[in-house]
Image (cartoon, rainbow, N blue to C red):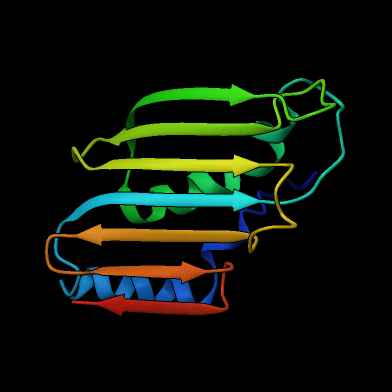
Length: 139
């Protein structure tokens, strides 16, 4: 039997370039990470389906840039007509002391691109739009 984890959002050219910016010290020390992931998914198989199916991708990307997570605080909201927690606001503190925030929704993709990740550092920042479509940075 083979088992694999398909957390593919961190295996893109944009993420590779962002990791290079971090390794080169261009961004400096990571201070914060703002992550958002939205899709429109009507699935309501379990109350936690949104968090279980969508946000391992989000948290994996956040950990790629911020390292291990030490503390978590989360708030959930059931969108109109929903029986599951379809919206989430999650705050994290990384082991390094840096902070992060994740906004996620199974109800909002009509209004947003699928994903956005912003990493702010002591010397600059970068933003990855739509998983792989665009990387912008400033220092």
